[in-house]
Length: 117
Figure 1 (cartoon, rainbow, N blue to C red):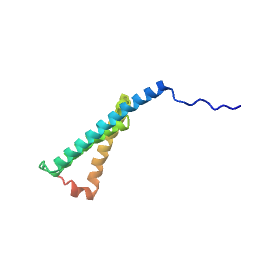
Figure 2: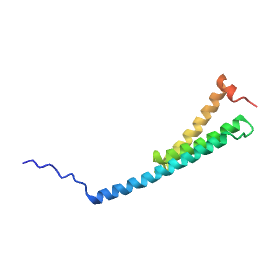
Figure 3: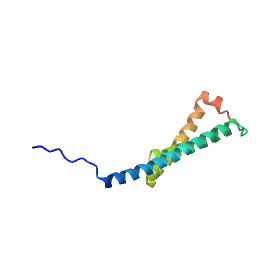
Figure 4: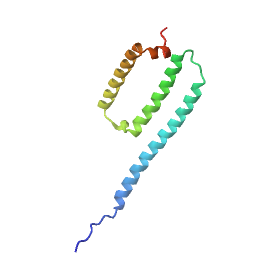
């Protein structure tokens, strides 16, 4: 009468799928190790005085940016994107940096954190 369709897996398809998964897992483990390393660097740098508070914050932001870049490149699959996405992200970053600089001059609460001179 009504025979159900054959839904058994083709061994060839399974091998291709398993190889693709192993490739992604390796990338995830590499990023995990990188994040763990950069976390250790962040903790070590927190004990170093770079002269001013701005310099300390700048170094911390640099390490955080590297960590965020690694996460975005692998987990958000930006490593395989075309040049257009990078252009958009760079323009967005420049614009946001400018907006933060403008807002910093306007908010009194930030003047205490980032005094002039």
